[in-house]
Each structure stands twice: as structure tokens, then as C-alpha cells.
Image (cartoon, rainbow, N blue to C red; front, top):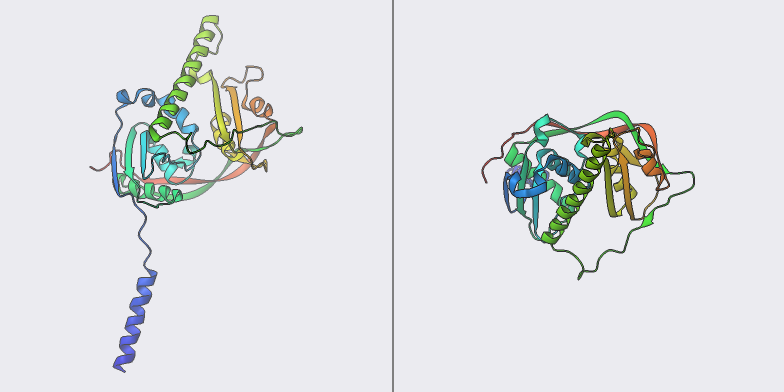
Length: 293
């Protein structure tokens, strides 16, 4: 009888151990601190942060350096969106989430798959900011990206670079900053020209928004179109390739041919209005200030 009881207890302990969930993957070492906007140049300008935000696909966490991630001047809104693989517009929380930028540098355990970086960022935000969230869904008016009547007019992307041509992490960050500076300079020049002509298109809210992506899928394009359409966009083109895409739209609907619908039509695509069910991340609790490193 004693043997039977001991065996039963041993089996129960084994089952309990088997049911214990595995520990969430975490960064080996992580530094989180408020970004010094003056030192980050254009990264500290809210409009530049917005531009960079909309050039990232949902869930993307840059990891150009092997074994390390380095995020410069990311708002909490962007960090939460990246951690949970949603767009910034699909995060529901306090308005101040986009006010302050943070610098994060973290060491990734060797052999960690890229798809685990999001989970590791979730754990870091929970630990340093006390972040608590839950997922929800909402139905809202949006658009479906589809192929136009005469077929797509998309330019195929250039082949990916060879290992010898790949940029280092610092080179990639410098290139991103340079592209953002170029976009800002072009936008400010256009605004100044409009002001000198006395046209009503002198302010940032009505300026053109040129964007270029050298290698992008239609699914990624749909996520980028959210900021132009100001509504959710999902891809239903059925296209599977990668393309080089440039679009320019005006935030002023009175400009002939300047709407996002016109820009998409030039690509042989179209935006069709539709009610969409969107998954959102709702912030239940978060601190403005991270705990000490």
C-alpha cells in the first residue's frame, strides 16, 4: 500500500512539473532610458518619429547587429505596437504614449529566432514599465487593397543584396536617418513654395507625403497605406511578390489627383471601402517612467 501511495504522489509531481509553463524568453541584458531628443537630431522631431513609425511593418523589431537590438527614440506607443505585432493605430491607451521617446539596447541570447524578439520585448516592457494589456477586437470602417480593373502596374523589387553588400547595423541606421532627412527637406521645400505662391497648401496638415519603399509586399504596402487612408487597410490583392513602390498623396482633398485613391490607382490597384474586424491591444496599466537599469 505504501508503495502504491508513493508511486501515485510521484506521478502527481511529474504531472505538475509537466504542466508548468516554460519561462518566457528574455534579453540577457537590457538598457532602457529616456531619449535625449537634442542628441538624436531628427529622431527627436515628432513628425520624423511619425514618418519612421509608418515606414515599419507591424511587429518589426530591427536587429541588424547579430545578438543585439538597438532602438533609438522609440515612443512607448511604438514599442507596444512592435511587441504585440500590431500597428500603432491599433493600440488603445493613454494619449501620452507617443510623447516621450526611449533608447533601448539589449543583448539577445545566441540562437534566438527572430520571431521571439517580440515576446522578449513584451517581457521587457512588463518588467520596466509595469505594462499590462489585453487583446480585443473592434469593427470599424476601413479599406481593402485589391487589384484594379486593368491589372497591377507594380515594378518588381531589385534582388536582395549579397552578404558582401549588406549594411552593418550602424550603416543601416545612418541610411534610415538620411532617408528621413531627405523626406523632411522635400516636404518643407514644398510647403515653403506653396506659401510663397499664396496657395492654401502651406501647412503640415495639408502637405504632400511622398514615400518610397525599394522592396515591399502588398501586405506591407497595405499597412503603410493606413496613415494616408486614415483607416485600417487589409491586403486582398493575392499578389505574392516584392515590389519597388513610390507614392505621393496630398492631405488636401482639393488637389486634383492628389488623394491616396489616385496614388494607388497609378499602381494598378484600388482601395474599396469595407467594414473590417480589427484586432487591437488595450493598455490596462503602464508607467511613464521605466525602472532603473
